[in-house]
Amino acid sequence: MSDSPPLKVAMVVGEHSGDQLGFKVMRALKERLGSDGVAFSGVGGEAMEAEGLHSLFPLADIAVMGILPVIARLPTIVRRVHATVDAVLAARPDVLVIIDSPDFTHAVAKRVRRKAPGLPVVDYVSPSVWAWRPGRARAMRAYVDHVLALLPFEPDAHRRLGGPDCTYVGHPLIERLDELRPTPAEAARRAQSPPILLVLPGSRRSEIARLLQPFGEALALLAQRGLAFEAVLPAVSHLADTIRAAVAPWPVQPRIVLGETAKYEAFRTARAALAASGTVTLELALSGVPMVVAYRVSRLEEQLKHLINAPSIVLPNLILEDNAVPELLQRDSAPDRLADALAPLLGDTNARRAQQAAFGRLDALMTLPDGDAPSRRAAQVILDAVAARRR
Image 1: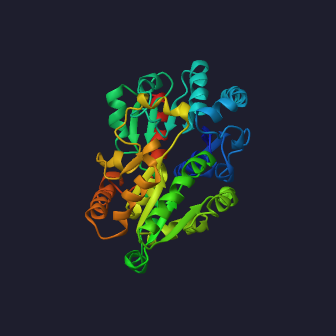
Image 2: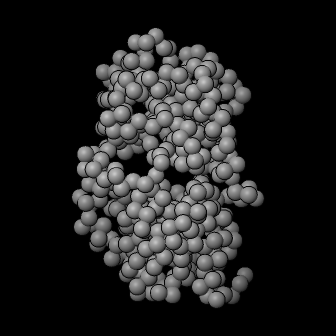
Image 3: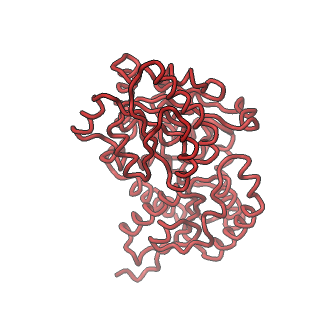
């Protein structure tokens, strides 16, 4: 056993997805340094607490997304920012790791950097500087030493925009390909009739409120055109009752499944999907499911669309540098447009084959060169950042 003190790592996350990344990095650091060789403090969720971090407060206090929800919760978020900064400084860590949720975590990092300029700061999950507010990349250099990117094109984006050093550490989904890829029996079900059509209106209440109705009407139009299919709607448990009530009047009734295991089982047998924009589109692409993507935002958020600088909002399209997946946004996501785009994907068509061919290129673009796991690669970059600051 080493007599040297443990490496002290402060970690700050803002929502459940960050908690999932955080606990894996904690586990990877313990694998490298031993359980007694690293100590954690900061803000996390249940998974990080199970790995040994005692969170300053529950994530529910700050886990909000979108302009209007953030504004509504702003006083609480500001209080939590200041409390987190004070706690990080009191802990005197060797490194601060902030994970996603930039509205919260970057506010913490900026203040910590001003008061402890020698403390290395690592940002796990790059903000979407390649799409929105590109000036953030250069601004981040003042308070972030290294960015850990989930998407393979992000290091080039930071170099182009003058951002901090950035390393692609791999998307967590590349560790789950076995869960996403069909077995021979599941692949056979994909080819059988009636085909399974996934309906994925999002995991947030606001997304579901805007997309469920046009999605249901699109399914009805497909059925009216004589297309036979089985609709399956994977739902998050806390919104299941809301979804059941909303789909009750639909002429085409979807089978609702709950939980991640059931969701991935549906992915492995589905012929096509109608999905909200988000991480689910990358899950579908890695599973080999052709899709149509739709999204609607509030009128206030729509007024900001001219500030978006990306050629697509669909993650597979961005990674492939090819708009292989059709995306229908705002008024374009009308039921008839959705049905027109979906219909070819249910049969053996050029449109379906083109998407499948594009998805076949993702593994080479996303897999780490040595087959390393994202969490282990992230842990190594964190340790390298500590060593660089000490030098």
